Image (cartoon, rainbow, N blue to C red; front, side, top):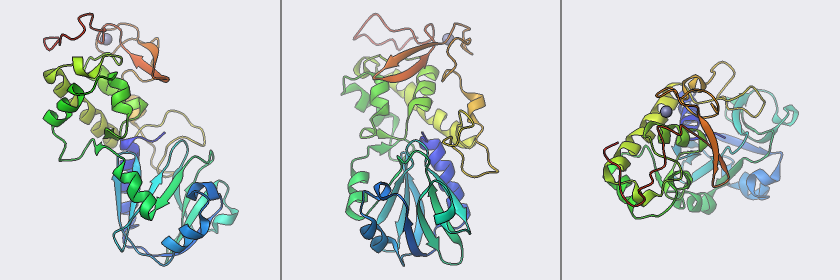
Length: 286
Ligand SMILES: [Zn+2]
């Protein structure tokens, strides 16, 4: 499932090929659930509209229309954007396609059918429900630490909650917690101000590295992330703990373990990320 670095990689690609500045001439919907069964509403809202910008909030890709209203694209498990000259009716797995003036079709290719596209009020509500984007310049280390201190939740669950901070999924959360040497089940308010700041920098570093490497792809299946055929994501080669169960920790050599936190598969170094037995006492010295 694409996280912030994968969606940002896609956004940069779409901006580079000039999607912002193109005009939608018609809309094709193959799978009504992609647009919440509202095929006519979608066609009406998007046809004959200009796309003025390609943006991102957390894991949501956003097309800005000429009246400044947003269209959100949530890629979920297997969504991908592909461009083609061929009619989308004959292309397998295309659930929604936008005909762009003079530029063929922009297709939402989605074998598993979980991707969703919203516009108008629904898109605005969806954006309003999102927490601060983790790369937002307005988000400071201090504000991040305050948010952790005032909540009493397992840190991994908190970081995955898009209504608090937007952008992290399973991969980059495990990587950031490993970098910051924090156990994923540690309660957020026990982490302490200094260590929270360390975690904030680890989160940003994990996200920026992911972007630098064009995102992460974990297999070769049809649902795997890739922006287009010629650009292969490379960050999988740089992961320290995610899906490395049984392998040595790159920092201390201990065997990486897999546990389940909030129903999510979680990877950690049991030595570097030992659970503090002094609950409620911060371990800023470690
Ligand atoms: Zn270790």
